[in-house]
Length: 101
Image (cartoon, rainbow, N blue to C red):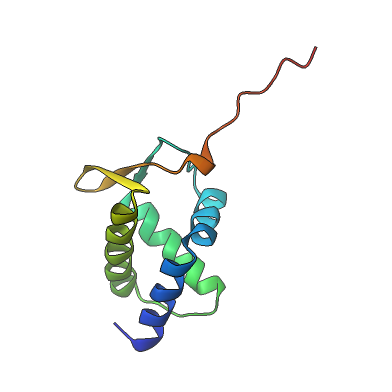
């Protein structure tokens, strides 16, 4: 991977809550919901492009694998199968709306 991308990966790992919030705004991402590898890959690619960091499809795939392993170690992602996880991030719990009356 290019040095610029390694720097971006390190920054994402330091403040991963910002990236997760971006993913939540882009994809249906909730506590205990399923999340798939391609969603992570494309979300990562779009996130970096918004930060004006050009990344190729193969680089995004490598980057996403590394980031996924980081999230698994943190306990944010719980592997369900070879291409997806269950999100374990209580900050993304959906609230039940109260009775309006």
